[in-house]
Image 1 (cartoon, rainbow, N blue to C red):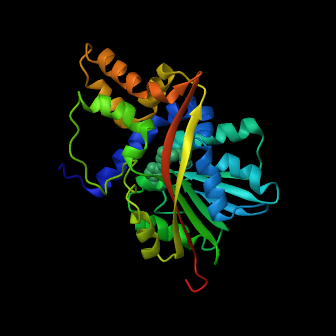
Image 2 (cartoon, protein in one colour):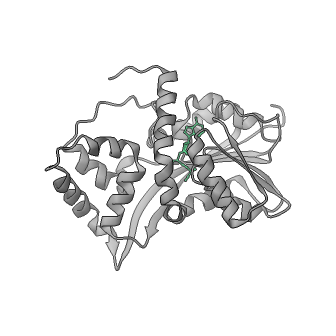
Length: 288
Ligand SMILES: C[S@@+](CC[C@H](N)C(=O)[O-])C[C@H]1O[C@@H](n2cnc3c(N)ncnc32)[C@H](O)[C@@H]1O
């Protein structure tokens, strides 16, 4: 297994997301649609409603912040955060286009939040906890900046094999490009796929009443298999890297194998992948 120090790892993770930002911006409408059930799950689990002050960690091209800004309304507010400048610019531009005035932006990492204690009612994170440099430090920070009895709620992917949105392409590519064995605790989309893993860290960070819910949903949008291939191979840093290592004559073979594997999830011009995620939620105790 390749050894890499945590600081170097964090730097690499952020550089990868900076390169990804333009693709997350390009596909923002599809991303919002594809992962909308996760946003609804977070809103439900964290008990988000009108008038609340919500903190979003690792907001990427703007979700769930943009949706939550509509839920909390003019008497509430959302603080969008992300450590990557390109992501913040993308989300901020979209909020401007929509004329949203109850959303604020801060470029920062989850493990060092520039907010006073008890500044927010709840904190959420959609598909970003897996990339935190030091998850326990980040979760302590999220608990620190929310009010007593407020909730921290995090959405992460379930096991890779239950998520063909990923495996249909990854498996085809991995048959041609060797992947080094990965440290299961290194930043990766499936770092918290094992049930109980993130819940344990949230409990150790000091949260009470920690609950983990499995959320199964369909990743659904109107695109073709060809557009799916393009979306995935642009949005994913690891796929971009692996595809760059393919020989020119291998690329069409891999692409066809991936499209063949994904074909059964496309019916009548619509893509519909079954997906499995976990939503982990904990409460800040009044004592902490
Ligand atoms: C998969 S994207 C999710 C973006 C968005 N929340 C969504 O669901 O569409 C992961 C995000 O986590 C961010 N991220 C990476 N490291 C982070 C860290 N240490 N703290 C907070 N966010 C981080 C990335 O910049 C990226 O925007």
